[in-house]
Length: 201
Length: 160
Image (cartoon, rainbow over all chains, first blue to last red; front, side):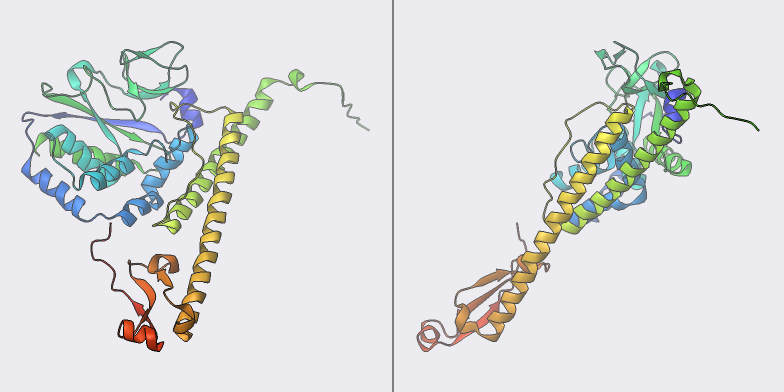
């Protein structure tokens, strides 16, 4: 964590874990857990989610970094909205399903990078002037995820190829973004759930 | 006796930077706390408004970054405005519901004076999609004879 970001947001951090992904096909067990989570949801619950501790912490954090969470919803609210619009948590592939499961279970967003192209430690810092993130220039001070060599992606944005984990990635680096007021144990739980779902453990 | 001389003409630029930074840090912390509290109150108001939707002013899409003190103050002030609008909207809705409940009471007391009036459960702030309406008993015969009654429709099981 850069000192400026750490001073502004004590408790904001990126935790990571390495995991294998041998088979990229959807896992039946994960699909069943996603279906179970989808079946328990209605509109009122989706709205009231924002009052729960962890989702509320992500909403507050988005506000504090200048994003309106009603316009750009938090990852958990986006996932729940997707469930309401599509009628279910439709299986896509093992990586996406594992990340979605971790998000729905804990409300902590986890992103996956190709471990071969990234080198921990992962940190959060403000972008430098004219810095390129995934090939796109971002404004100075934009909060980004970086590893020890390069910027990876904008905070809360989806990783882009080639750094994003894809069908050819056999080892992944899972990164959980934990905001202030969220316990470290919740972040660990999110990473463990995602790693177990992806590696089939 | 010791005397302290204060130069009133000294500007803040003359003060050492270490004296200002902790103050700004504290101000930023306070503003962030206020923003978090206001967001929680706004979330509670949105949940209270369900199934209606609160139309609140939105910020333009931006990238996440550390906000300046001025930006944090603007954010805080914007949220205070949004919260005031949300509370006004909820209060106005409560008044409408109270008026609807009063009308329903009058309909029940004297159906003949409220012929063909309809009030939905939603207008009353009650769950479901039933509708209270004043209808003639026995169709045309009741209409001719003035036999009016209040009926609650059972609503629709698959309301859109």
